[in-house]
Image (cartoon, rainbow, N blue to C red):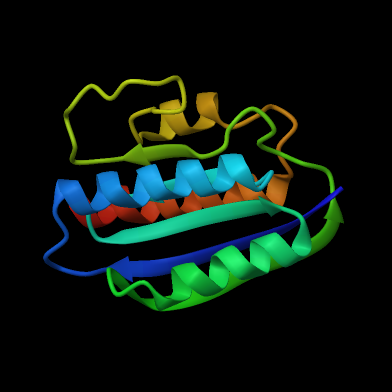
Length: 144
């Protein structure tokens, strides 16, 4: 059983691909070393991320994330404890839209409604599925 935390934030307007790559590299390494798994979506403007793992570690990682100057307007939208792990196979699954590079690694998927639905675990908590799906839908509508 793990603790989970989901937050949304607004990326700095001048974020570059290298900033996102740094975020991903740091998160993957930190998560792998600390038994933390989860999912990060970034649409070119905003982030939504779920962290799951030991409560003290999730709190420590989120505290570090909240201090990161590459984003603002950070809002925790869900916290839960003693929950089954949802993303056991991913130290960090991630999707970046508006980034046409073919990224290496099986954790990468393009952010569309179809690919998000296919990438999310079948047994994913319906509340979490709805949060990620609504982020994707709102972002897709904003891009139109």
